[in-house]
Length: 321
Image (cartoon, rainbow, N blue to C red; front, side, top):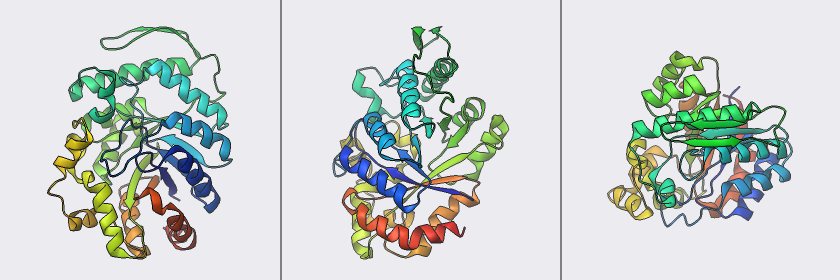
């Protein structure tokens, strides 16, 4: 059976609401929580971006059953990998073994804030591999001194080490990142229901490991309102990862999405309260071989009615898949 998750999306809600939403998601039966880890929203209309790791610490204490994960953290620029290892180990302890560290090569939007030049994608992948070597060694209890081409660590050690280190899931959007995920990851993360990503992941060593996708939806009893909200807050979504990773600020995302129409967004994101339409969006991931799908309800101010509808209609329908 596929695991159905809920995304506590920091780009569209503040920290207090994210914790409350996480508790509610556990109460109604979601299997896991995916937490975005950004410095900035994609668009000003979204309006939020709290510190994810503080939110995760609070969520770990406020929940009991539901699994947690970052979707995703970049462990190379804004955060040093030794610090990511420390944060992940701490959340794993606080959650009593419910945490997965989801990592990726990053986005310009979030990583440029430390003042470093944004490297090309091949260098970002090299940096990610070096970060994984540091994190894995620290999870194994080693005191790590590392001198790579891009990253360094000196006598880095985790003094509070969980009995079972967090699994590491890697985000991938193309052949090279799939190869890295297969070689170094315990799971694959992808935002598109592309079976080719899974095939490449398998060939690179990922066969039999989880594949975690994410599906956006815009629930509302008023379909037109759902379409309007999806366009206002998610019109950036259609540019493709190659474009999104390179844009440095919200104004650039707004400019890139300037010609995107409401109907264009509605073609990609199911809008309204037709359960079958939302189930069909999740089914695309299942048909592509994904084992986990995290839902994103567009709009921070409509989570309560979404939860009521999800408990009553959506989750029972998804359980039948």
